[in-house]
Image 1 (cartoon, rainbow, N blue to C red):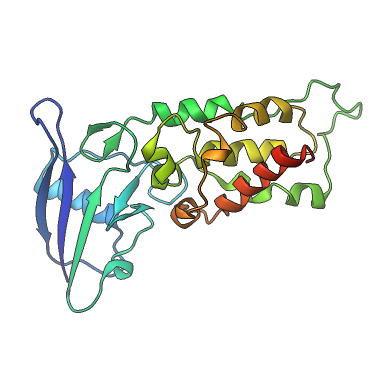
Image 2 (cartoon, rainbow, N blue to C red; image 1 turned 180 degrees about the vertical axis):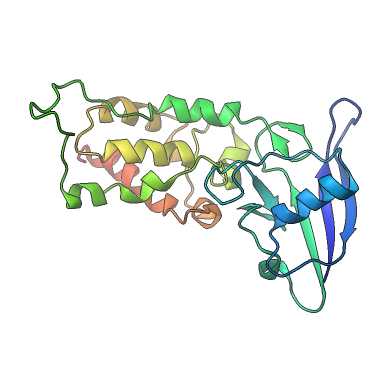
Amino acid sequence: MQAELRIRRFNPEKDSKPWWGEYTLENVNDTDSVLDLLHRLKWEVDGTLTLRRSCAHGVCGSDAMRINGANALACKMLVQRLKSSGDMVKIQVEPILGLPVLKDLIVDMEPFFDHYRSVQPYFINNTPAPEDGRERRQSQADRARFDDTTKCILCAACTTSCPSFWANDKYVGPAAIVQAHRFIFDSRDYGAEERLEVVGDNFGVWRCRTVFNCTNACPREIEVTKAIAEVKTVLATGSI
């Protein structure tokens, strides 16, 4: 099979604006991932192509990109999902939107992580540890309340698919709200009030327009829009 790739390129050292690089690869298989093809391009065709990746197994979240107009992890997007028919597939790859492009497919993740850090994404409980030396226990039902939002890998696919984030990057974004949800609904945690103050301000959950882009973009299939709605409910009712 043949693959025609159209890749958004930008080198700040020499380019005044982004441009499209067009490449053709032969002997492509249905089971190849987009990351496999990008590796072939970089290693065999154009060594200047720059991208971020690590584990290549959908765990690290570092290779989130915009593939054929939708956010996805390059390592999880297989050619067979993009091929329409015949022995040729067309693939367009761009950096995720809403974050500054450093080079080619690499964006500056610091604004994203600033929002992540703002919700205090860590366990807060200063009460004495159990005397028996064991962990703080929790029922299965209590765990189930936030289990879905523990799956986040911080790939930024949800936040950078959000029109509200594109419109104003001060919006804390879906990923940060997912992290806040994970601890707000943890019965062992005592930091809900501080987190709710962050996600309840002008650039918090009320900026969400329930477009569902975030849910569709999540490679871990987290129900992001549902989590945001649950945080809104807590803010509106004052009850967790």
